[in-house]
Length: 342
Image 1 (cartoon, rainbow, N blue to C red):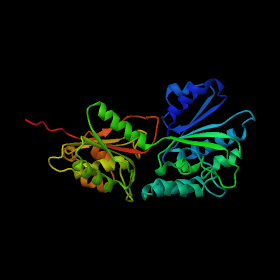
Image 2: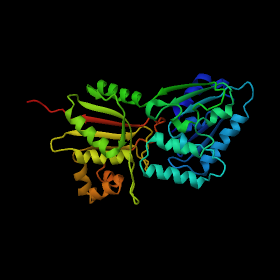
Image 3: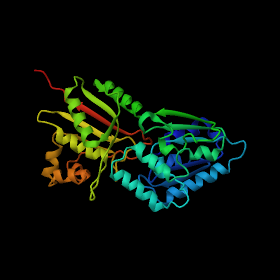
Image 4: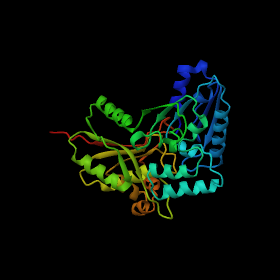
């Protein structure tokens, strides 16, 4: 959600030629190094549910594109989270309509492609909206992907996807995704002497089902650990507590461990935030449930009411990284305790 590294990279490569820059990012995701860049305007906006700032950001983006001079060449740096951060609505559609759609999709566990397709129906910006504004003007678009198949027509609800009927001259490059993150995790493990089994497919669907499958796969692998990337979903009850899909997944995984499972499992969002919390996720083991219960938490209620953060906080298993500067989806890392042979 915060293309910090992208922006710093752009300034490092072409800074002297940058006449103007606009950064639209999530609250609290702008660091001092970025804020000091010349010719830069920063708009901090809302995620995962848009608000009035999302519309203001969309209006500013439209104004900037419309005001480009003939000798200016636009470069767009897009990462996951853009759907909520920047928006322009179709006539007759209100912010309340947009917020209701986002809240319904998140609560009902829609996958990212389904949610983005629904958002596009209300939007002038999604589904190739920026390409329509460019009206055939050449441009570069660089993407960090958090969606299945890494399709630019889905990333950010396709705001820089292709637009029907437009003489499209946008060069689109997806250069980072969850596969890069999982490979890096496996490589870092190898540097520590650990051999990881790297799953090639991407997980999706119900977070609880993913958690149980991951624990079973970790139990079966002959490697020191297991790495898996993707994005799960949850279907929230009418009344839900604090937490996100990764925290719910982590708590279910902890409950799925058996006696003798000497596992440590990390479930985290690569952007550093998870659901309605400022935590990235959680790192759990076979003692997580007991630690939470000893602290007075009804873990079964926490699972039932999606109040996973309460239980994980009591177990001291929450993981807080702060903004990471990227968003390629979610990652699961499981490590098996090596048993000493006497």
